[in-house]
Length: 84
Image (tube, rainbow, N blue to C red):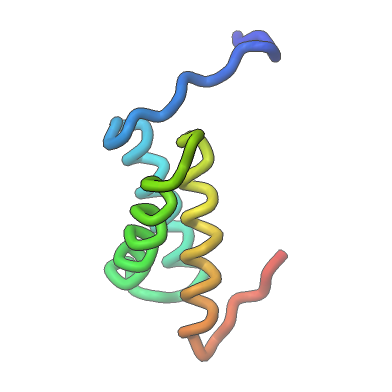
């Protein structure tokens, strides 16, 4: 069990953990926005690449890329998903 003061190790670019997080984010966005996974992946990858080049701390890049991709998809979609 992890101590509350312990931090997760930083994500390494293209690590299996990072790839799994990205795949999960893309699948969730595709389901949420009712967009084809290929479209979601394209948008997510663009946002992720942009954020990854400027990020000082990489742990939250997937989260921020997901948010930005969701915003782009919402603007494109005639059926805008409800935000919680």
